[in-house]
Length: 357
Image (cartoon, rainbow, N blue to C red; front, side, top):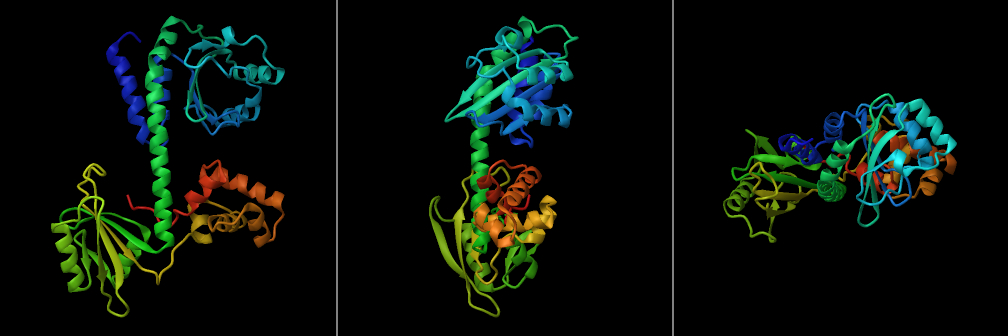
């Protein structure tokens, strides 16, 4: 790819795809097209513990699953960091199990590069052609070499975005568990974001409601207070505490914080947090079944895990054997697209507490 415009388009696909779900598919498709490659694959894992992410756009899912089963026999691993290497140049011995897989896949023409990202993330980029296609040449090697510094940046950005998203889910889960309504408002009081607790409060209409997309407290004193805060929000890093009166019970405690101008691109101005301890929130078995298509047994196990139980304690609580619980957990991982129990629990706790998009 000698054309700088074409290379710039490829980079745009790489960086622009980081905020999409899934993040790498568009770039890998574009890379496969640019290199006349049957498949472009990205594999991400930690250390030698296995594969956490395996992205091969256009590949038969059964082929991907089959590779994951025999990935430990793959000899095309541990390449010199940051160097473009071909399968034929690097591999001197192919284990019989992996040779059988190559024979079925008809693909011994592979070009790859390995990148290591701190603290222990291993990233493998692979281009694969059918055996009937021409071998990879200098053009493909040069392109991958040019991409390496950009791949490093993109991987680091993706890691930071993923961490930020996980933290956001965790905080959202905590807010839901504490029954805290969270609303993001613009300068005019229009509601830009709301979590599930806020949605319930708005629908009930006893404390706050929504009219013409704007927040409308049910009492005049709260409306006056919020209007005053919108006109003069607290300095960044500080907050204003106030009460929101209710018609039938004690006042609810609330706080307001200014939103940094760079946080959103939609005019967000103020964040409101209203505590409503009379309505504890959290995932239900029915919500987990509907959201993730879990069986009743899987949802029961997932609910106990979301509440902080260990796998062994959750198995005892629902009266199943530990090995059965492990089998259910593997199925739950597959249905929720998670890989670790901590990641799963973080996701489960966001059910009912996510921001409306």
